[in-house]
Amino acid sequence: MNLLNTEHLWSNQDSFLDIPPQELQARDYELENDLFEFFYKSLIHKDNLLKGDQLSSIINLYEEREQYLEHCNHQITRKVIQKIKQTLPERAMIDSQGLMWPSEGLRNKVLSQRSNLFHSYTHLPDSHRLANLTVDFKLQPHSGHYDSKFMQIQPLFEFHKFFTLPKPDVTHFQLRHLVYCVDKNSVFYIENGPESSRIMRLDPETNKIYTQLDLVNSQFADLKISTISANRSLISIGSFNGTLLTYDLHTNRFQEYLLTNHLDGIITYILMSRHRSFANQLMISSNDKFLRSFDYTTNQVIKADKLDFAINTICEGPVSEQSQVLISGDTQNSFIIDRRLPKLSALPIILTGHYDYTFASDWNINHLIATGNQDGTVRIYDTRYLSNTTKNPSGNSTLFTFSGKLNGAIRNLKFDDTGNYLAFAESIDNVYLIDLKSGGLENIDPGLMCPPTPPSSRIPLQYQPISCIGKITGLSFIPSENNTQVLTIGITDFSSGGILQYKIDNYVDPQIAAFI
Image (cartoon, rainbow, N blue to C red; front, side):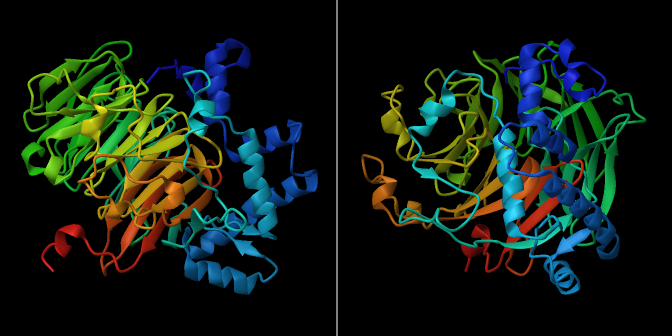
């Protein structure tokens, strides 16, 4: 992560004249997108799509929503939406965040206006244009004339719930791994209070919120949280000053460790392994260009490797490739390394194709890797073909490339446990859910010596756009009861933020399916 001085980005008292041009650009790009900033920019924007009376009516929508939320326990469900429609039949559309629109067209105008005002931050010149030349699937946030013989919008998951009481936050606009759903009763997220940061837990089953960890009365009251990771037993917390915090959910044991006191020591990502062989280890990247392995049971660093670039995201292979991890960061390429080795391999497997820096990645059970980049694209790789590309590191090893409407930086993406679905988010407003089976990826023959045929000759790709109003703070898939699977989305916005959930029925956990 090419770190900016973000102190200005937390303060409302500084003058624009006091902010260096690069920081002003970052502020304008991806941090200031709440409702009031949107109204102000809309009024002064030369290509404003909204008239003054329409902006006033939008303010009224939020006021109506606040009144209604008191009656539905601050939780929007399908039943609540149906009840609102019966009570207010003149409202043509009630969206998943509980806003009651007089017409779907007005909501689409608002989203279009937000996309006009939005500009995605990049580090390398011309990266968006170059990346766009390689896109196979340009996904759109609305159905209709965007469907083609290559792409079809389909309702893959159904709206489940939206919780308005949680207020998830973003502390650095490039780091969005701040929401983790570990089971049906636990969604962890960060919330920045007036005095300190807190780790909160939402129980979606009861709509109750608990303060899991409050730093205000501790020696870490001034700590700014940069990233979190969680499972059913542990929460790991990274900070801006290089301090790692771990909290055992079973014993309430709290530990801290200063990984680095480097000025650029912000912790960018924490990988908590799903594999038994590495269950006690955390892999931690920080902006001082170090990759560290940390044993949280002994509170010690096991291994530390210095790289030529800062790492922004890490993911691990499935059971069949569990010793391998993918590292991506402030470089156009990503690298597969073997974590069992005492030092990083001198000959890593190289994944090529991106034109900017990578901030999101994941690896599924079907040997597919996805990377999300500031060039506005998601690239899909198959590890069964990568051995051919290592002999030609300058070649493009990508199988497929996706992008969204905004061409915005991709800072969140996740595969589900079956490997059949991929969700990715642009910085604001748009999440896309892709059915990889529909693209024929499950029929790839690993015996082939070359990648599969181009997308244009394959069956149509089915995907579902999920639109919201706000910045995306995290994505998480979790199996639930009764053969359902839930996609959890964190949204931060002063007026309309919260935790959004979609679900799919007839889900079978792949670990269970193996015994059926």
